[in-house]
Length: 189
Image (cartoon, rainbow, N blue to C red; front, side, top):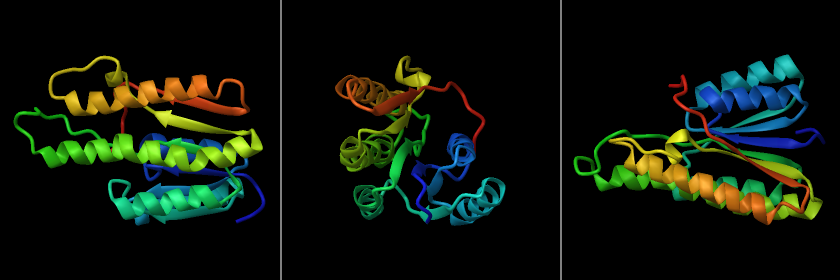
């Protein structure tokens, strides 16, 4: 990696995460792209490095797994060049709570809430020590209004909404910016 600031984008292999990666690379950030699908990450890394002249590191992890969350936490805690965290990784299972397995709900909660919270905790001390940087959390309009078969997903995104609002208030007098993005239905895999 070079001496430029680094942006870490979770869920970067497609959709919103890939768009954030492209936009941040265009602004001169080196990147760490985090997702489960290494083939997609590697292809995106090659494309962004060639197009924008930045260093791009693909990092294959599953943020629904404890060891993988801990791995990314370590990177965020120890790499002083990390200036932006985009908490984009997440997934939705639109199904009735009564007709679904509890493990599916737990997996959604781990990825949509636990990983986002832990990665935010990991990056925050470094950002505050420099009084600069940004945390971008991807929520959903379903965090404001739940529909049938979205109870767990909507609940997890409501957490993202309130967590982000609270963090914005806590950091209002610092140089660290916190942003919430709440898209509606999005074309993604």
